[in-house]
Amino acid sequence: MPKSDLILLALSDLQMLQLFERALVASSYKVAIAREKTALDKVLQESSPALVILEEEFAGQDGLTVAEDLLDRFPTMPVVLFLSHETVPVLRKAISIGVSDCLCAPLRIEDIGQAVERSIRRADRVGDWTRREIRRTTASLQHRVKELQKFETIVNTIEDGVMILDERQCILLINPVVRRTFGLWQEEDLTGRPVLEVIDHPDLRSLLTSDGKGIAPHHEINFDDGRCLSAQCTPIPGVGLAITMQDISYLRQIDRLKSEFINTVSHDLRSPLTAILGYVDLLERVGPLNDAQREFIQRVQISVESITGLVNDLLELGRIEAGVDSQKEMIRLDSLVQLTAETLEVQINEKRQKLTLEIPPGKPLELRGNPIRLRQMLDNLLGNAIKYTPEGGEIIVELEEQAEQIILRVTDTGPGIPPSDQPHIFEKFYRASNVPKGVGGSGLGLAIVKSIVDNHHGRIWVESILGKGSTFVVVLPIYRDEK
Ligand code: ADP
Image 1: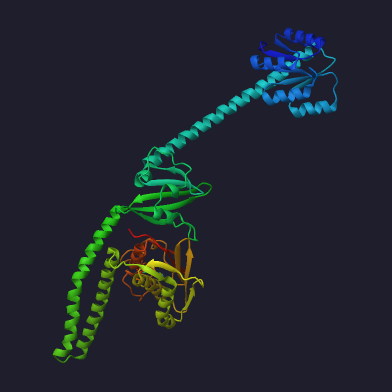
Image 2: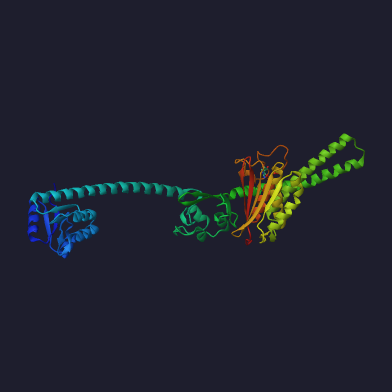
């Protein structure tokens, strides 16, 4: 039992003081004495006693108030209260303050030693437990720091751009690839800053701007120098948002080469096709034909016209992709939607379908765009809705303006598009596995639509449930500076 502990006696009564001192020295404790408040503070500061014995009334002050103050400043130090009379209110207050023990006159020498030893032992146990807990917490924190360091190393060395944002879209983490891509200084600490303040890029802005259906999950970020990133947004519950970006510039380059090739071939095909049609037309004029010959000629005509249609679509796509005739003016999309609907009325009626236009009344929905191309976009989207929706089905076209953008939704009650086909339907010549038998098409319509939307710096995606229907969503900025 280590008895070198220092016990501070804060007692005013001289007789009691001597009694306590004798008892403690007999039990081999060291003793310090304070008979008034200043001396008490001095010993506490300079000698860090292991325990304080405090009288009920110390140096004219209420001992319980002094004890409370002591425990406020030194919460782990045991304080033993010496009372001349035990009363329930005093004991209750002593317990509520957190006094370690109470001694009451008349006292025996061994009572003092035992009370002191008990309190010190308990304080030691609390101290040991606290140290153990601190060690355990520190070890677990060190482990987590190591894990975080590992995570940071992965994020920093990964080839993709990674950004983690909080719920207010402020930066929590940004990796070197993102910094390099957007020309941000490596050294600058960007944590906590709003991402759109740090990276002022219109495509990132539209990726992060809510369009009424939440943030778009996929998006392309284009740069004037031709670079292109594919960006994905993943909400992280309780954190915010993770944005990952891959450089797809090389895919763009391949696509460009492919388009150039298709364009050249289509162009070269046009003249022979015109010649075939011309000579087929002439056949009847150079001599009489029998019925079989006439039927064969008709079949040749139908086939050549179908190839000509395909070639024309390809050339059209090439022109849109090349940005030819991309002159833009302020146009009313609501009027264009109405006009398209009127033109397609015959087809809608033929299939006994119901078309509903949901256009907010009052304000015209204007945007800067190319009227011919936007009309082509609407023709294709509505045309597909009519084509793929069975007889008696329903088509809804909605328009709304939100945050400097016009949102167009074309919803149908058609067959829906299988999830595995959805990422590909905007590719050239792609026809999904849902196409009903006998429904014709070249697989170029949506590629044309996507090019037109890109040309207007907009976004397009499909939301579809198999067997229920599809919604094509187009988001077009109302106005954007053309460089
Ligand atoms: P297509 O000439 O085949 O209609 P598109 O490029 O217009 O070519 O469309 C590509 C494919 O997307 C279609 O073949 C079809 O599988 C699917 N698709 C397009 N629109 C719809 C729709 N409204 N409902 C169901 N499937 C559709």
